[in-house]
Image (cartoon, rainbow, N blue to C red; front, side):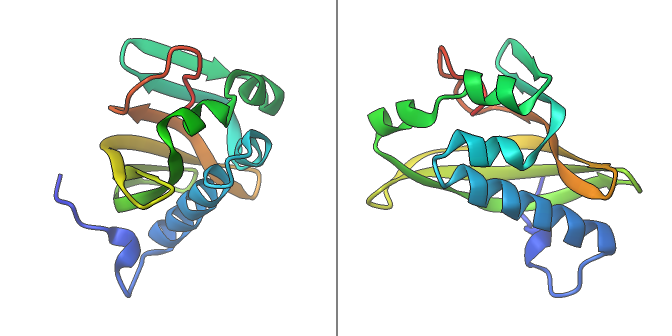
Length: 145
């Protein structure tokens, strides 16, 4: 997969524009460090595949309960950012993005980078991330990251 960020293109298709907006909302909410804000920008049931684990959260409350973000303090986490996002499949109700994100400390030192597949769906009139498959590390108790 080329490291081409389709979200940075000056002319975007309607679907790429929708997907980039949903991904930006996701990252903005995650970077608050508040699991309730993060859980609010997802669709449910929400699915995460990481390593050998597959997790499914049926509700916002289930997701928030399982994803305490305080452990990020242990690694001096400051924020995440997209390195690139590429829309690879799309249709009127579902978008697939191959992407890479990086995690940084509060002092802008790179902690890790990893590729993922994010699935964005439209439920009603709202587009949001509903599934993620990641090569990122899995924390023992917190599998949402």
